[in-house]
Every structure is written in C-alpha cells, then in structure tokens.
Image 1 (tube, rainbow, N blue to C red):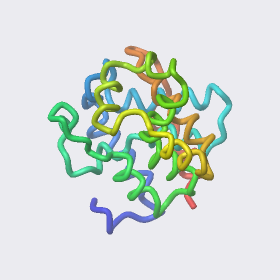
Image 2 (cartoon, helix red, strand yellow; image 1 turned 135 degrees about the horizontal axis):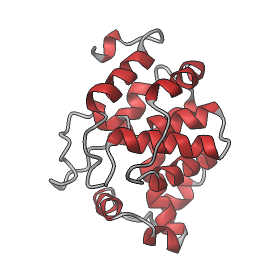
Image 3 (cartoon, rainbow, N blue to C red; image 1 turned 90 degrees about the horizontal axis):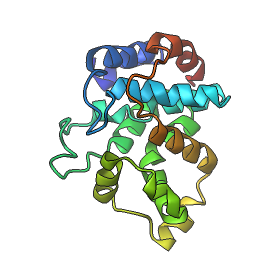
Image 4 (tube, rainbow, N blue to C red; image 1 turned 90 degrees about the vertical axis):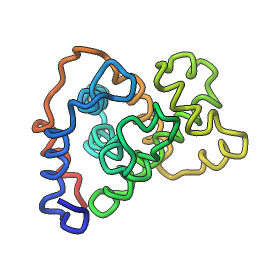
Length: 188
C-alpha cells in the first residue's frame, strides 16, 4: 500500500501490517528487534500512566525506519537515514501534532539530553552512541535554546527517555493488536 492510498480508515491496519511483516528485523545493533523496541517503548509509557497520545507516540516513534528509502543497514554504512522525518511525514496526515512532534524530534531529543544532562550520554547503548555521532552529536547552545522553545518539549523528552530504555532482550510486552484501540482513538 503506497502513501497516497492511505486514509484514516486504513492507516492503523497499514502500520499493523508493517509490524507483522518487518517487526522482526534487527534494531540497528541492539539486542532487540524493531517491534520489540517499539512495543517496549509503548509499554514503558503505559506503565508510567501516560495518556493515549503519548503511548501512541512511544509506539510509533521509530516507524520511519520502515518508510525511509535507505536500507536497514544505513547506520552501519555511516549514513543517517533521517527516520524521524520520514516517520513524521507519514503520520502528519493522520495523527495529532503531539504524536508527530514526538516522532519528528526524538532524535533531536537525544542530542538535546546529551548536551544538557552529562549523565545521559553515559546511559546510551553502543548503537545509540554510534547513531548520535551520525546525527550531529550533542546540541550546541544555540540548538539547545531553539529546542527548548518547542511546544511539545515535555512529551518529546518523555518519548526519548522511553526510547532509550526500551532495549531489554526477552521483555514480555503486549502485542501490536493490544495497542490498536489506542492508535485508533488517537487519529485526528
């Protein structure tokens, strides 16, 4: 199904199909698959009592890895695939701005946190350290000031923290089907 065929009526099924077909793919050097990572992110959000939009954002934050025209090994080849922009572009037609912003800026949030919280970098996985280098490293002071002006800053930071924690091999989570009602209720 190509982007122009997507509608509010079928986008959740489309995303579910992606999870089914491609979710078992490697998560770029991590010990979990892409679907395990995204489902763990959603579970972390749920466990913290986040609202449905933030749970949806946590679940969808890396969907751009599937919509990018770069291959799955792009990071290993030294290429930043800009999955955050690709994912936000797909979701913007269907989901509220807070979800789109969390997807669009979760990479920038890693750069931000590395600049403003010295201990954050130390908690990054090896794969996150590599991708941080490809994504521009910690933000400059000017970038930090601009990032702090974003409307949905707190939500973006929360999704980023769940993103970094969601890399636990073997962790049992609800499956994608369990999150479909949350995604459907979050459609605009």
